[in-house]
Image (tube, rainbow, N blue to C red; front, side, top):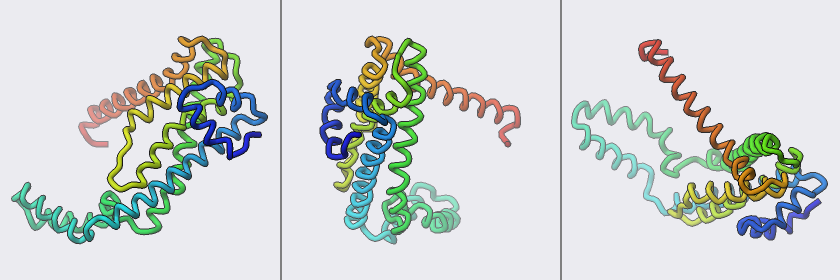
Amino acid sequence: MLQPRTYPRLLGQALTLEPAPFVEMADDDNPWIEGLFFAFVLGVLIALARLFGGLLLSASLPPSSAILEALVAGLKQALPVQQAGIELFVRQLWPWLIPLFNYGSGWLRLLVLIVTPLALIVQWLLYAAASHAAARALGGSGTLSQTLGAVALSVAPRIFLAATIVPFVAVSALLIHAWGLLIAYRGLQVAHNLPPGKAAAAALIPFALGALILAFTIVLGIGLLTLTGGGV
């Protein structure tokens, strides 16, 4: 059983694609438990950074009433017709828009502490299951538990999201996902003893399947709208 104090080392080595952390995770007594705990700890750290970053950002923003008035004035200028109706609509909708402008209430902000780790864990589980099936189909020898442990390290680049604790700082989602994909490739290669080409294919197949499912859903939705004449 790995100790949490080893996680910073595992994270740093995973980011540089060294094989050691993947071997450690795959050879652990309970790789999937290690992977679960690793993803959970990282998710909590990111959630805390977002929580405090949101509080700092809110403290640096003008009062929400000033934002509302500016929004109403801008819409009136852009849409001179039905100004009274537009203003009424925006004012009624404003309580639901407040979180988008970082003015959420305390309990809404605390949801990030639950949603962020949970979303990270679900993404890890779905991707690991799909990539494991692909790796086995390509001749891989690893178990599902070993795949879950090794692929859990692919969430490592998300540690850079902790930088959002600083107001107005943004981290490239493309960079995070591309880096994570490289780490997943390395994890599958080690856990399943696959050659580079097959490991790359196993890492990419889940994304291809996701794209196909999304395309099918869009086509199906358009087809239903066409058949129903725009009404469901």
